[in-house]
Amino acid sequence: MTIAGVSIVLLLGIVNLILVVFQVSTGKKWVKVHFAWHRRLGLLLLFTALIHAVLAYLSR
Image 1 (cartoon, rainbow, N blue to C red):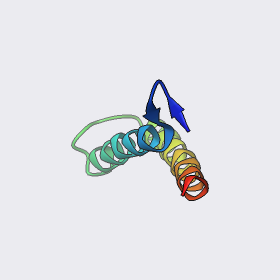
Image 2 (tube, rainbow, N blue to C red):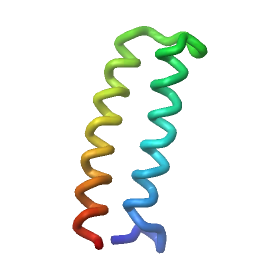
Image 3 (cartoon, rainbow, N blue to C red):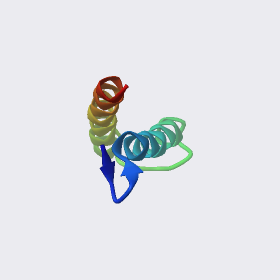
Image 4 (cartoon, rainbow, N blue to C red):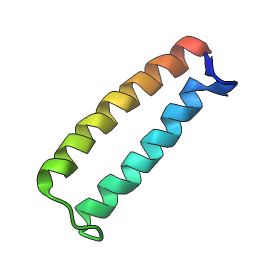
């Protein structure tokens, strides 16, 4: 499963890494954001991580 020659699993892994870094930095108050953004992006992280895991499992 690829998009323009790049694996979808790899792309989702990079997105997950960015979301995790954002979640940690807002949770530690290094970056100030409204709590609603922290919560919404946490849910986005959950869904992208689930999709990433399922696709990785199916592609092996």
